[in-house]
Structure formats: structure tokens, C-alpha cells
Image (cartoon, rainbow, N blue to C red; front, side):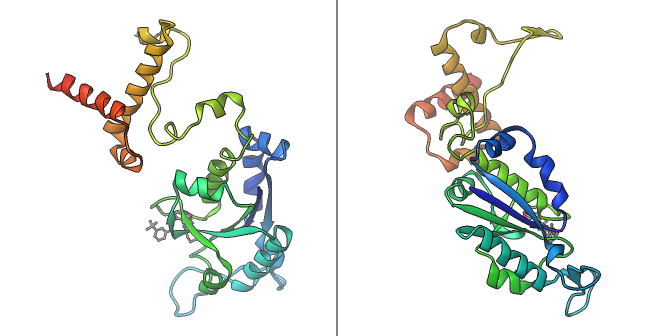
Length: 245
Ligand SMILES: CC(C)(C)c1cccc(C(=O)NCC2(NC(=O)c3cccc4nocc34)CCCCC2)c1
């Protein structure tokens, strides 16, 4: 999987690629990543990447020519890549989109700055528009990092034995149970006894129940993404009847 980011701030990316699972995935050749400076594709003395908007108004728009040339170069270097524009107008990013993107050969991320990119780029050079959420950002760079993070961990081999064992379709659709580690008593708050019991059936039962109940209480919308098994529905029913009594 090859990641290419087109940005006017390429220096934002090495720190992101030099840590944790991403770094290990690069070292293991599971992914490769590079940032292309759009400014390198300007032709004027001032290396201008933006210009005033037609129709007037405040703010600047990213010029189409440098972007088009940068995208062409990125595609020449990574031919079977999908070109993704990070934009508020994009389809909402979620785990399902991450899984879909993790199957492609390569991803070229176009990161907007100023008021956005010239519409001719969106029309003729973009294969997919993706948004990471409904809030105002100063650029698309962080959005591209979020996608690279979520997609990398889905690539075979990216997660070590431990993490990949923890990963399955169930765990990627519900909130996690509470996590505890030493000390047993932290400032007066004790770890639940079941977790110290050594009874793995009871521990798994507790983890499944608390995970389902937390999701039901905090993010019921996630439960609509994935049908619950009769067993899981029973867990929620029992819990609800317990609080009714
Ligand atoms: C209604 C809503 C969403 C609040 C909104 C409405 C109007 C503008 C924005 C906004 O943020 N414009 C600035 C801009 N944002 C983004 O790139 C961006 C934002 C959010 C999620 C993203 N995912 O990828 C990229 C994303 C960065 C500078 C270049 C122009 C785009 C937001």
C-alpha cells in the first residue's frame, strides 16, 4: 500500500510517519509513504499556489495548474492509486470506508488549504471525496493522517500478534469494555473482582456485557450498524430489566 500526500506543508508528515504502528508498518514494508510539496509544481518566481477567487469575495483558492501537475506526477509514481480529495463535501469517513480503502493498491491524498481547491480539480482529477467530520479545519492534512492511520492498521501484518488478536468485526463495531492495569487499588478505586478471578469465561462475559451496555448507553447508533445476536440482545434486556427493578 503506497500513500502519497499532496500538500503545501510536507513537513507535517515525517513526525506522523516516524512513530508507533505506522513507523513499524513502513519499516516492515507493509506501507510506504511520501509527501509531495505542491509548491514544487509552481512555475512563477514566488512559487504561488493560490490566487484570488473568480466572483470576488474574501479568501484565496488553490490554483488548478500546480495541483494538476502534482497529481499527474503522483499518479506516474504510483499508477494504481486512488486520488482522494480531503474535503468537508466528502462522504463521511468511518470504519467501513477505512476497510474499503485498505483494499486499494495506493492512495493519493489531496489536502486543501485556503478556501479550497479549484473546482476543475474536483471535476477532473479526483476519484473520491472524503470528510472526517463536521467541523471547520484549516487544512486537509490532519484528515489525511487520520485516514492513513485507520487504513494502515487494517493492512495484513500491520498489527502485531497481540493487537491483531484483539481485532475482529465485533470489536470494531462496539465501544470497548473498561481497561485496568496495576495497581489494584488506585487512590481508593479498586479493579472489579471478576478481572482478578482468573475465571476466563466470567471475564469474557463481563467484557462482552460492559462493551454492549456502554455502546447501548453512549453510542446506540453504532448498534444499528451491525445486527445484535439473540445472545447479545438478551444481555441488554437483562441489564434493562435489572435497572427497572
Ligand atoms: C460544514 C463544515 C464541515 C463545518 C464546513 C463548512 C464549510 C467549510 C468547512 C471547512 O472546514 N473548510 C476548510 C477546509 N476544511 C477541510 O478540509 C475539512 C473540514 C472538515 C472535515 C474534513 N475532512 O477532510 C477535509 C476536511 C480546509 C481548508 C481548505 C478548504 C476546506 C467546514
